[in-house]
Length: 233
Image 1 (tube, rainbow, N blue to C red):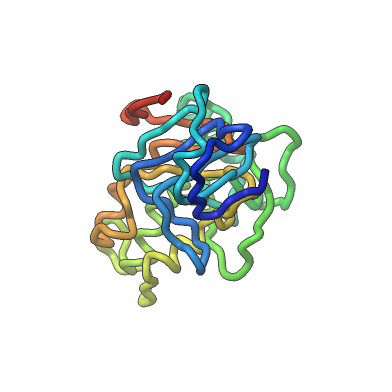
Image 2: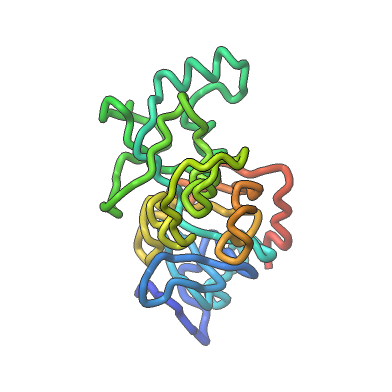
């Protein structure tokens, strides 16, 4: 079966998708089709983007976005995983391992300060986007990409203090944090935000939350506030 981008099928493809997102906004970062309203996943990869109803089978896990924003998982270009794990343990934050904590913020890809990543961690080191990238320096500063995006598009810190004279538009700021573009055949590393940051006032971006993170097509974090709606058709 061919992978499909913005697919409009009139027959059930075989095999069907394992997970389908619908009912919200999908931001692909693909210049030709940056926005869609659905995404299907199979075998850990993106199966289709756009009209995904035909990919829903009896066992497909259907997640209603209900107006939320689905976009690529985030990449942090500067983290100290060892210091982060120690910080979490000292702060008595559970779960106490750094990778799982990073998933709470939609992060699926990192560049560690020592340029190494211990084998088996549920994070990637690939940086396929290239160009200028955001790096938090965590745990010295917050790991939350939405705080970084807020600073990038407003030029202000959360307390109103000016941190930069440069103000990016939201799309360019997201590009600097996104691990990769969403395209059929690519690994399904995704983040679901509580609101569509492409539409809300820039000063409200930091109020949004990551409500779900997928790594290789598997849900690795889900906020208690996320009602998935109709799980099966």
